[in-house]
View 1: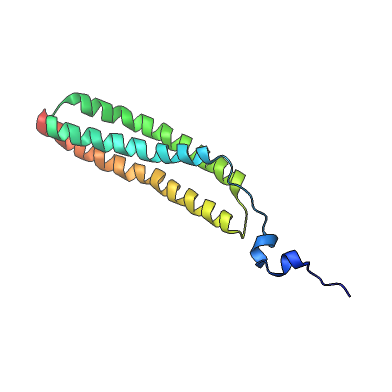
View 2: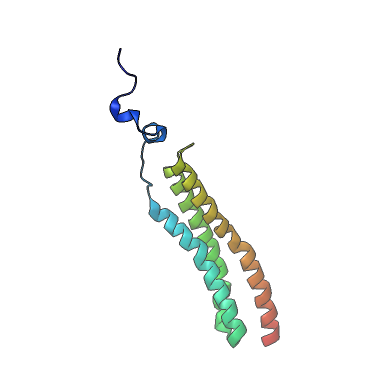
Length: 132
């Protein structure tokens, strides 16, 4: 009577041969989404701090245009994350869980741009009233 498993698979953990090893594809999309999450927030807060310290209205104007650029970056980041997740999702696998965690973390940072932008606008308007 033959054995159900060959000798090569007898000592291997179940996950090694039950789940195929698949490399993460299009990692650059996650990197782009991370940049799109962090860059508008960093530029906006930097403009607010620069305007608070110097009173130069160039910072205020740059911060104003950062709002529009931030929205475009949000849309680009969401598209990149959607494609990245679509290419790499594998249900019930460790890699699928890792991809899900990376995407939800990055989406959290993308969404966090909106309250940060609101706070920057409110503080910026208060500073404009003080400097004007």
